Image (cartoon, rainbow, N blue to C red; front, side):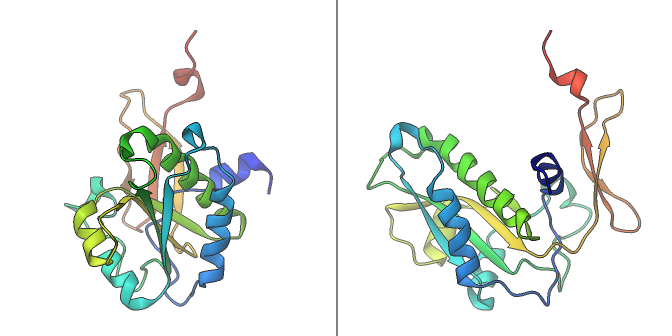
Length: 194
């Protein structure tokens, strides 16, 4: 798959094959990819909590919210389609006290890990709807380690279709009666400043 196809395949998946299991080695490989990413002033303050067992996955799932735009309509993921694993991207305040200065780093490593997962036939979703303190406490993390973003991972088991957004500019994603997930994207000519 060329890079452009990889980017188009890398969607925010919220439904996974419930029979597929991920290993710690697969998660470590994704972190190894993140390890080589650029970091603000090369501080490298990010650490990673890995989970691929049912009990810990349940703790993380209980702390996060998927598909905020759809939460009044349906609960995702559907039962039996939960992620196989998670990576919690954390900031080590012992290395750099202010996490706000490293938000770019969180985005860079997260997108890199998701592209690496996609290249392996996997998929994921970035989740930021959670209480960092509660998640850290529930996972038994030290106070100096602050959860910043959660990556849900697994083998995708849902259809996602990108469509051009309408003239009204509505970019709200939605699902049809067959549970197909549609993601309106702004057109290229609407993104380029002339």
